[in-house]
Image (cartoon, rainbow, N blue to C red):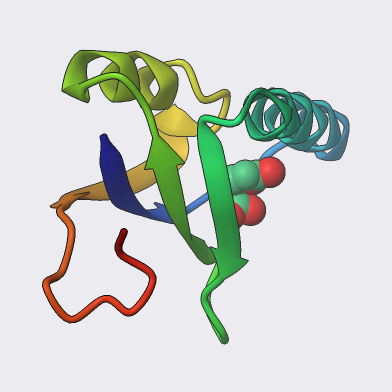
Length: 94
Ligand SMILES: O=C(O)C[C@H]1C=CC(=O)O1
């Protein structure tokens, strides 16, 4: 199943720099492992924001919830999930 996910990040401005660096590194590693595994299909930066729009290809909503819930940055995120379906006008549809 395909889902579009918008993640907006809001880190405390007074966060310890070392802790922030370590947190972002863990987030990067977590994200890239899921990308390599094929479930995190796209990640794009939202121009002008500390946010991304991503596409996930996962078994179901429970799997996506588990992925998002375990993002190291999840406690500092506002997440919007949109389920996606095939479009009848898609030229790439089989
Ligand atoms: O920067 C972001 O958009 C937030 C988060 C998502 C993946 C990652 O590496 O950081």
